[in-house]
Amino acid sequence: MSRSEPELPPNSAMHELRTRIDALDARLVALLAERSALIDEAARIKARENLPARIDSRVEEVAANARTLAAEHGLDPDLAEQLWRVMMEHFIAQEDRVLSVPKQG
Image (cartoon, rainbow, N blue to C red; front, side, top):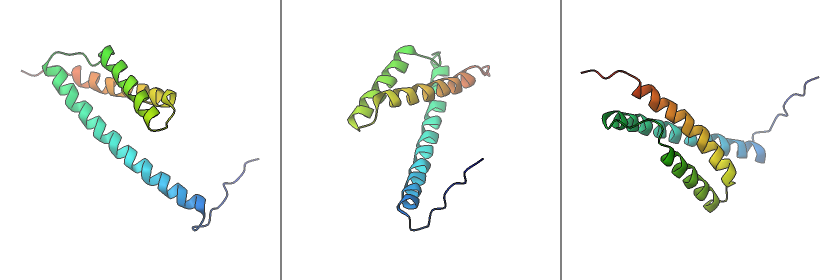
């Protein structure tokens, strides 16, 4: 037996809140896309400077920064760290793909 989702009238406070959440999600996705573009730039620099995709000290620095910023903004630092670690693993893999392309020359 499945429950159907309740219909929200357009003037519902919940409908308005969901609209705000959807708008925030769109901004978050745009920011992640911007971060992804910066990661591509970082990969090009790392390739030029013969640096690896993963630099453990930087990973830990970014995780610590996420925790600090989360605490300053009233967000659970454990959640922020967990999200950032997932994000960093994705972006390290993205850098690795760029770095694994043979150099032309």
